[in-house]
Length: 547
Ligand SMILES: *Cc1c(COP(=O)(O)O)cnc(C)c1O
Image (cartoon, rainbow, N blue to C red; front, top):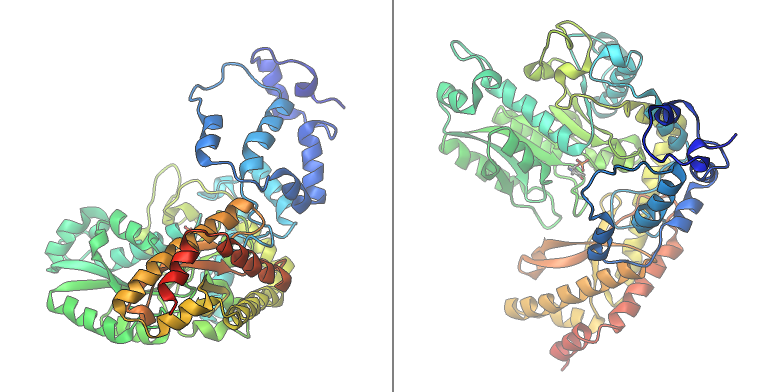
C-alpha cells in the first residue's frame, strides 16, 4: 500500500485529496506510519532519540513559530511530520525521563497510548448522552469509585446515587483548576441560594446576594501554601482575589490552626461570611498536608463548606499503608483529585467529588435542545461543555493497575523521597529544607562552612547569605537544566528557622517508578560539580563566611 500524500504531490487542496485523509489509513512504510510503529514498540526509545538534550533558547525557538499566515498550500503528511519532528518534538521536554524529577508530570504506562488513539478516534463528547452513550455511565462509575476512595460509603449508597439522574457524586473535568472552581461554585451557590424574594446568586449575582443576606462580604480561607487556582476561582465567581485569605502556616508548611481560628473570628466580627475553608492535601510547593480533621471541625463551627484540594496528593488514598496521611479528608464536603498527576493518566483528567450527592444541583443548567431536565447528561452540572472521554483512561488504569498496584507506585514514591532526603541530610554540603511527607521535598546546596555560619548568624547576616545562596541555587538549577542530563525545579519558600525569610530551593517530585537511587546520587553529584563551576557566587559565599 502506498501513502497518497507521500507519493503524489497535492499541488493544491482538492476535494478528492481531502476525501483521502478521511478514509485512507497511513501506510506502515510512510513516515508517520514508521513513527506509529516505533512509538508503539518503544515509546521511551523514540522520545530519547527525538528529543534533543541540548537547550536552544526560547527566543531562538520562537523564530520557528513566527508566521501568522494560515497556509494556502497543502503539505505532504510526510513533509509535515518531518517538520514536527525537527522543530517541535526535538525541542519539547522529556517529562518521562527517569532523571526528570522536577515536576508532577512523569512517565505513563504504555497501554495508555493505544487507548488514547482509540479515544481520539471515537471522538465521544461527554456533554450529553447522544454523543457518548456508554461513556456516560462509565464516567459516573469512575466518579463513584473515586468518591468511594475518599468517603468509603457502603455498596447501597453507590447503588442508590451513582447513576441517579437528579444526583451526581462529582464532576469529571480537564484538571485540578476546573475541579477547584467547580467545588467553590457549588459552595457559593449553596450558601447564597434562593430564599424568599431572592432568586439565588446563580440568577441575581453576588451584589444582590450580599444585600439579601446582609453580609458585608464573603471569604475563602486557605493556607499561604494554597494553589493559585483558588484565586482564579474567587475571581471568576465574583468573590474577588483579595477575599481569598492566606492563613499562616506552621514550621511544617501546614495550616496553623490557631491562626485559622483568629482569622475566622476576625471575619465574623466584620460580618464577612466564611464561604469556604480549603485544606490542601499535598501542597504544590512542599507536598505537605494540612491538619484536615481540625479544619473540618472549624468549618462546621462556622457552617462553611469544607473543600480539600488533593489535586496532587489525593492518589495517596490508594495506598493502605499511607492513606492515614490524609486523615480527615472524609470530612470534606468536596475533594479535588487530579488523575493526571499521581494516577499516571495523561493530561486532561481532573475531578471533584462531593460528599452529598445532591450538592451539584446548585449549579445545574438546562437547555432545551440538549441537557433536558431529568436526563443523565453530564453537561448539566459541569463547567466545561464539550469534553473528551478521558474517564476511560482512569477507568482502564484503575482496572489494569488495580488498587494494590497503585499502592506499590505510591509507596515507592514516598520511600524514594525518604531515601533522597536521607542522602541529602548525610551530605554536609546540602541542606534539606522541607522533609518529604509524601513524595515531594525541597533542598539546596549550602557548603558545610556556610551551614555552620548560618547556625549562629543574626537576621541581617542570614539575609545577606541567603541572597547569595539564592543566586547560587538559580545558577545550579539553570545549568543543570541546560546540560539536559537531569532536571529539578526551583521555587521560593519561607523558612521559619531563617527569620521567615524566603529562600530559593530545588524542588523534587519522585513519582516516576523508573527513577533509581543511582540517578538520585548522580543528581547531587552533578549539582555539586556545577556549584564548583560558579566563579561568582561560591567564592562570595566562602569569603563572607570564613574566619
Ligand atoms: C496541580 C494542582 C492544582 C491545579 O491542577 P491543574 O490540573 O494544573 O489545573 C491545584 N491544586 C494543587 C494542590 C495542585 O497540585
